[in-house]
Image 1 (cartoon, rainbow over the protein chains, first blue to last red):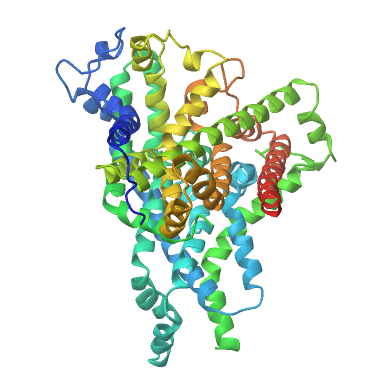
Image 2 (cartoon, one colour):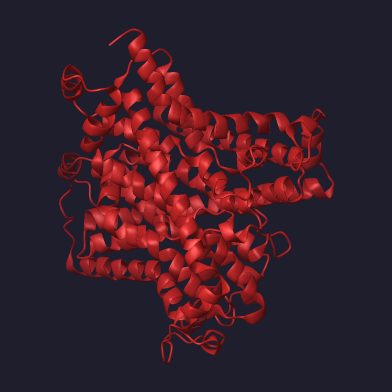
Length: 281
Length: 297
């Protein structure tokens, strides 16, 4: 940590002004979303716009539940994000352990091949992947959304970085005690890299809760399997005829809540992990 | 630590991740490369593909409507990516220095708020910004009006729609890159600054001769990640602009999906995907080459 930059008083004032301005700009769209969800439909259509609803109402949240199966969508999102995250944690721990602690031929080549996939935009593989998942009968199905994402390169990379720092003596001692390799990974190594696991869990859960392109492609038209972000886009098509912006904003607020809440609880791990993983080179 | 036992446990440790990545990433990548040279409907099995040589590439770069649409999409994505990087990098360094070096009261809170925007589903961001941008009912034009700036058309005009999407992207991503910038700044030892100050360096001079050079690796990494994120822009286009007005926001991810999945022209879509991949490889190599060259000077 560097020492606080000594600034003359007018400089300090400017710094505070900038801090407040940036925070307001960053928070404003989310505040507008929440405020709009509490307005009446008429209030959302006025020119110039109304900032604060005259009598804040939760009516829009009730109407959203009537239009889209909110409970079902949340369950679908939770299943997609939850199972995918669990899979990523397990597969990344194991592979990270192998890449960090085993010597084997082709290790660096294989690791490089895995890491390269981290930089591949999903659209490049979308068309054949869509056909591939369809050909094993998983299109239109939650399993089809989940299965291709149970392992990922970022998780392997992150785990290898952190497991490399786990002392070999700890692992050797467990081997001498007769522990199996699996037991070592999940009972010895995992507890030693908990902050990195928490960060990976947050990253994976939020990414897959928010992901849109792949579920849209796999599930096209199968409403009952839609996660909340897909159901939201259906809300917009209702909105085109009814022009109920408050409904759309209520739906958006609901969809934003789980990742934000998770972030608030886990952010200290996340920031620390980014700073210490050497992810910046 | 050698012999068959280890080899078996190596396989057991790697199979659950290498297997899925091979089947669901590397295999589709090879299929994309193969399909780019085939005529194939993505509604049918891969076995129905017929080899057409370079026809797909001729068509997507040709003078017909397929060619002009794709070239427009590539240009839009290039412009969107370049503008995004040009805004995100300086802002994240500025915000990072504000939080890490000037460290005003509330710096941690600011970092939290900035980073939180990165956690918001893009679909929600797109919905909210479509309302913020509304020329008549949106608060953005109202606020601009207060400081004497006239009504902007934002998403409804071909000349400003893409820039509006860039602003949305910068809003969502700048917090993530600010944290990366902070990570880079923490790696610069105080002693370097102290030494420079003893040599009489102050303010902007410190920034140009110490901060910026020592932040270069971070910045290169950030530029590459920002580029790869930028070519993936999809939700605001799919949800709000549908590529319009008049093709102004037809970006490459949206276009490839429309051609390859919705119109089921799998061969054409794959040729576009291969082109995108090549363009990315060239762009990233150029960034690294530029950095290496500068190092040799």
